[in-house]
Length: 627
Image 1 (cartoon, rainbow, N blue to C red):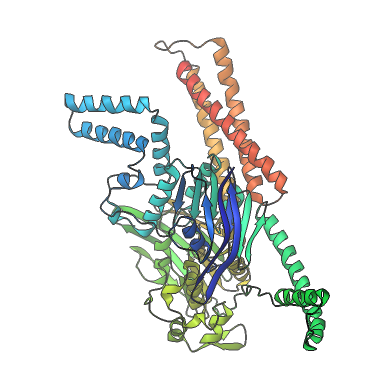
Image 2 (cartoon, rainbow, N blue to C red; image 1 turned 120 degrees about the vertical axis):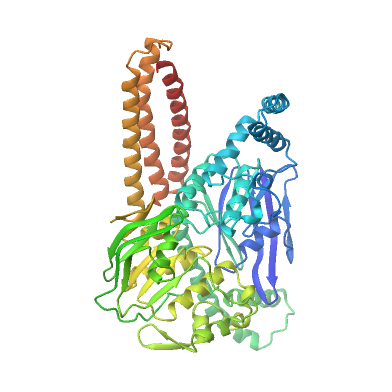
């Protein structure tokens, strides 16, 4: 069943053509990743679908009887609402019933009167009648996993990242047929992203998601739609399949264009003789020439070029961190941490949001001071610091002036220099765009400009705080390649697991309560080790609990022999299913396999997850009887 159909859609802003003649549809059950280079109009297309923006040509057809939810890049809320009021749609009857129940609970906590107890009983009865308990559990799961805890907090007090999480929670909670998500993983830590992957895979809905997170894309989506100037290209498979087939397509297009150019040169000679279209044959040849000319002159979008930077000389002494401590009030961020950096180190800094990663970077940069300990920098160190906050630039400033404020001539590569205009053009800001205002850039273009400005001073130590947010996949691949070959030192924090696996060789893991551990592995290896330890702990806990169940309990009903046998067997079944689920997760995230393989693995993953949930629930039921 077709839920959404986009027909011949085109959009331009002034002279800048975003996309032209776009056609695609979303059917029931499809989960599609929507990708394109920065500035190509991904967000604009989603806004057109939702009626927030207006297309120049074409139309959007949405099935009348379906519900759609949309996570926008910049969500809008009523600042005077609480989180609970913002996340729940007052027009939804279930939401209203749950809101009444939550209000009754809150009232009872301050007023234990008969009236308050009666109100709670009425609210609970309404929850029973409408079977709202499961829906309430879903709401609480989403809010809990996204670490949205204070439901009475006012929206106006939230940061930009917290607003995005609130908007994501709202879109996930709503009972919809089609979900549109614009960069849902931005502002989420890796644990949240992995939970989101599992949540979306378990939902029976259709999905169109703009994302640059390649692991997320592989885990959640079964198709990739790529937006280019001349339309949409579809790839049914994972990210590696997309890369392979796109390379094949581009090679064919280049070959066909070269053939068309050669043939056009021959046909031009015939056209110069100005043939009169008196016969059907000559008229057809003239029409064919103009078609050939369009094909030969087809405009190909400019490929993202390699990053190049002239690295300043680096001495023997780089950076020493000596037994530093840092706290904010009662919140201990770093406790007694030391590390001596060596040439060429590439370190990933990981941990949940708020664990202290950005604080650590600011300590190294000298923006804040440690409570104890010292940080000593080598005399030859030139830092390039990419921050989460972005550039502090006036919105009405032109791009060319932004770069010229830093330098008129930029050292480039190993021996050459570029002017400010040449430097911008090299990073795919064409000469007409260079005189546009900063406010007109897309989010990804602003991040690309920020990276350029970090490179201008020839740093030999890069500190990158979430550099992957809003960057398109092509730019990410180029940045990865640059960092892999970068001869200086690197520290980077990002929620992009594929990026971490590619560019770092060990990790600083912020584990909370000031603990920072150094793991000599990439992220996936660290995560696999962590999961193995978690499984071992759960196995020990189950074993300990089993031992406690063997002790006689006078106050409990005795379990039957069959129930005891079943309970013993469940331990092995749960362990086997858990291991199989981990294996399937690794297969789905590994990037190796055919589209059919991924379809089968996805089916097996969902089936294994369902069986694991059922057996764990039965284990809990029996544990209550046997205890």
